[in-house]
Length: 120
Image (cartoon, rainbow, N blue to C red; front, side):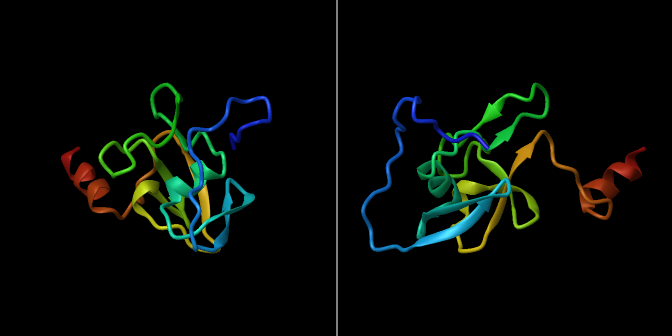
């Protein structure tokens, strides 16, 4: 988990005052208390998380970019489901979120895996 240290420059992301209560989540097995009522991406950014995933080819770190579901830079695993766009999912109490490392695996019974097997 990459979280800003005291010597890091100040974050560009600040939590706006709101009536939403904080919720407790887990990110890469670390407990976090984050503002509720917003996307997983916004909540993680507000908590200081700077790295959400790595690219499949080079392993370069990635984090949210567009915050509207167009770029796929914010992919994470949410409650055991990989490839979720964190900017499109509302944060809920008790969520277990993991950074996505490289390409996700397709289950063997997925339609895409079956189509590829027939092409061989």
